Length: 141
Image (cartoon, rainbow, N blue to C red):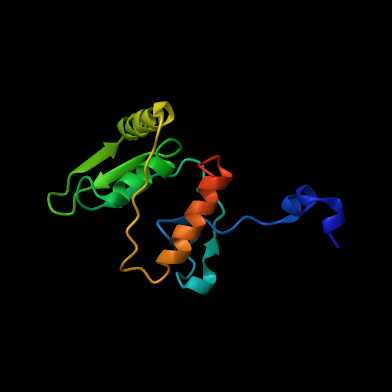
């Protein structure tokens, strides 16, 4: 029924998926109310003025993921669970490192991908999908 109007009205009428941080749904609980899952409101985006607190060791992949995904819009802090030190983190160094690798790949004449799928259940289908994406993106025919 909506197909005759095209994708734009369908996208405008759609609701965005609930916000997930590191695979977990983010919810808001108002003070004084219960904290059960059925009473928490799912969020679509992080509220303005909020901060993220990472509790754990320095340099983990979770810390990097939080910095790259949310570090430009919200402050991210790390609380060392052993020493109790609180540190404000910056995503600038990680973004510059990623930019450097993107520029190196862009300037390269040839890029190789190595995929090992011996222990994967879906290895063949992932390899086929990767090959189709590469061909569609202008890879060798």
